Amino acid sequence: MRNSMFKYAMLLIYLLLSFFPTTENLHAYTEERIKYEKSGDVIWEGYTDEKVVALTFDDGPSPKYTPLILDILDKFNAKATFFVTGSNAKKYPYLIYRQYLENHEIGNHTFNHDYRAENLKEELAKTATIIYEITGTTPTNFRPPEGVYNDEIVAIASEQGYTVVLWSWDQDPKDWDRPGVDAIVNHVTSNISSGDIILLHDSGGNRSQTVEALPKILEFLDENGYKTITVSEMIERTN
Picture 1 (spheres, rainbow, N blue to C red):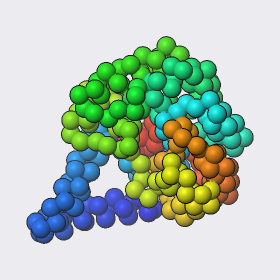
Picture 2 (cartoon, one colour):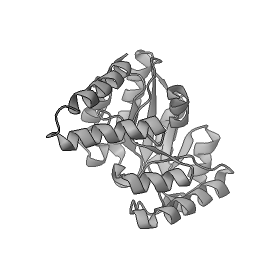
Picture 3 (tube, helix red, strand yellow):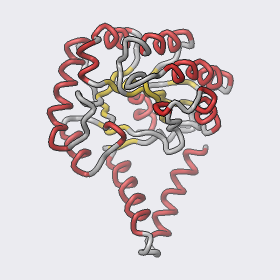
């Protein structure tokens, strides 16, 4: 229900801002998001009244933390989307294959965590090739490193057959900054709503707090009737 209200709120903001040209930055953001969501080139969240959310993990795989996260997901019969870097996928192909075997989704996060437009085509292609060589499948979703995007980045990704996947504005618990297990859990659970895309990390630093927070998040989701689905499944529901 909240996502439906948010969708109409975005439209109302857009209409109101048409009468207030001094709010140029906010107007540009609203106009830009509406444009991208309408085209389907970028997704921030799903618009559905089903109690479903998409857990996403960036920067992996990690030989230390990814197996622990996969074990926890398996225990809760939960699905996730892993936005992997090609450099890590090349080092740890067995973890990519395990993600694939356990029916998680594997997305492209560039080869070297490089979002510069001049390198993006090669970064995407190298990572896609590695994923295909391991799993026999080609990724269709791309998360730009650090969430950086612009018209050029979106255009390149779209030309390569990708949807750019960001995250719900209130579902970035900044686990990469190690704010504490309770802070990660409370941020996710206190803001939860249908269609959320939740941003977490399984590599790129010490992710022990994320590992410890994940069972508590999944327990909350189970207790409140939420199902975890992949990003592609969320896109299908939104469409």
